[in-house]
Image (cartoon, rainbow, N blue to C red; front, side, top):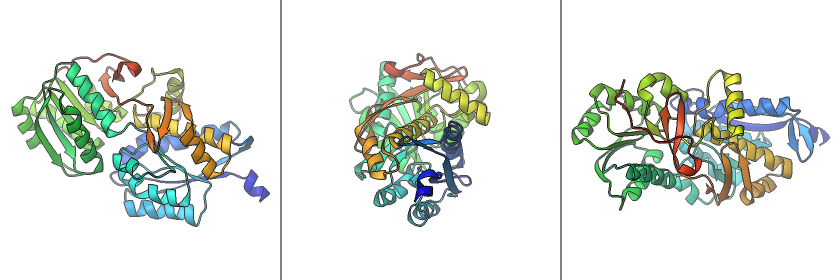
Length: 372
């Protein structure tokens, strides 16, 4: 027993290192888990109610497969009996694992899940860091309306993320004065969007909105450039907040909008985190979910300092307190983070500037130039 109380704190997770989820998982999530564990251990260990103990990460590749992901967590919580767990990447994986974590009584602070359905499950051990579809789409429509957009076209990936955000967008557009001239869904893993984009170009909307994953976000951007479709507002997400987007699109990234909620200018804590990430991995964190991942670890760390490894007490601490994090104050109502507002960011030079709402903005909206 004594060894258990002084030995390492075993923290388990499964993460995509192969398969289609890898891009997101290896930008937004796993690097942050590794950096956090290293920082904690370099500082003498995790403060467990006053006693410092080293962190040991126990992890595996979920291969971007729901079944593998679920099996991995079942093993971590069931037979391995790890002290704590960290969530996998993406809405679909979280949707599969969250009920399991709840049943085993493991607090689960998810930084890359975006789903109203997850909130509606009412799982007491489950917390979502990201702003959900309705606040995110409301922010986008407010920005478009305030800057004179009258028409919009949307494409969306045919899965939980795309469908929920599309539904939220339609609600947000109601009564906004912006009419939807085209809406098309596309399958996960799509390789060509140019016929759809040509059709949309002919309708000449003020705003184009892609509710997309990183590969499709880049595809839609490249193919819009190829077919000469350059609307006044070009919004695509997820993936626009990734440094990779800027690397791939080069000067053509300028003026592109997407889901983002922080950057190194947001606070001194954000700058310190950004610098540590770049120093450790020689790459920048993304300007949306990376910050949420780091913040989720800060919340967990504070909870363990206060409650030790009593998972019910950790859960109660997370549920009942307001948390100061790298991305600002976070407070949960049920599973939802109700403190972080919906936001829109835009590539300007080398930074993905938060341009809406004004309360957390790091820059002002600029007019999108022609593709370069």
